[in-house]
Structures are given as C-alpha cells and as structure tokens.
Length: 152
Image 1 (cartoon, one colour):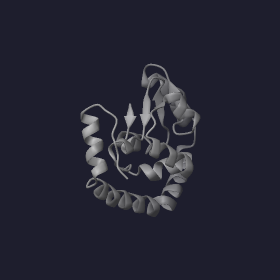
Image 2: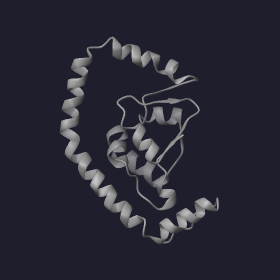
Image 3: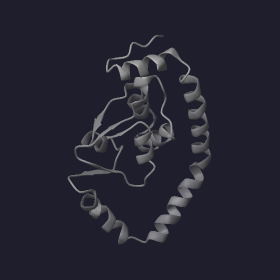
Image 4: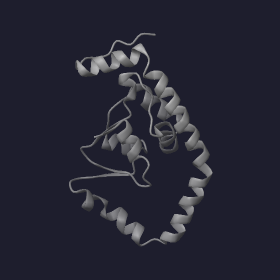
C-alpha cells in the first residue's frame, strides 16, 4: 500500500510503478486532515486539479490498475519489483541521461517556488486541522474501526 504521506513520497519519483496488487490512497480526509508532504502539488502535477480534489475529498482507495489508468502512476508489474522495473530501466539506460537530467533540472527550477508555497500552506492547514473536532473524531473512528461522524 501507498497511502497518505507514503503516496506523496512515491509521487516524488520521476517514474512511479506499482505491483499489480498494490493499493494507493490519499486518505487524509478519513481522519479530518489535508494531504501533506507536497501531496496537493504532486497530485495536481500528475492528474490535474479537478481529479486531485476528487481523490483527496473522497479518500478513495485505488487499485494499481485504476491508478495507472488515471495517470497517477506510470505502470504496474507482477511479482519482483526489480524484474517489473527492468523495461523502464533498460529504456532509461539506452537514453541520453545528461539531456534527461538537464530537462528535469529545468522543470524543477520552474516549479520550485510553487512547491515551497504548497508545503508551507499544507503545514499551516495541517496544524489548524489537527485542532478540529473532525480530526479528533477521525482518529477515534480509526482506532475503533468504524466510520467517522464528522460535523459541519
């Protein structure tokens, strides 16, 4: 599984692969929180704002195939990760890596300020959400293995 912050961390990679039985979720909503670890930025970058909001607001658990279909990840594999990644690795190794690195550096330099702002906004929002009754209820419900009853 790659859920919450774990999914944010996975989405930091240039190529994201998942074992075919993996489950992916941006499920902070279930405990009354917002994504962190750059989750807003990374989801928007991968699947666009509208789909990112839908995924965040529903907290839906996705199969690896569903995640690949929506563009959240780049592909799936069965079994051993080293074997599953082999076709992607071979393609990269046959490519002009220095040119690819320069392209990555250009994109990163263009997006760095946006990422910094998102991380700051997420930190502020998370601090605020941690003090809400919804977060307290979400944690209680999680520990008691029941659906939360959030208040408006």
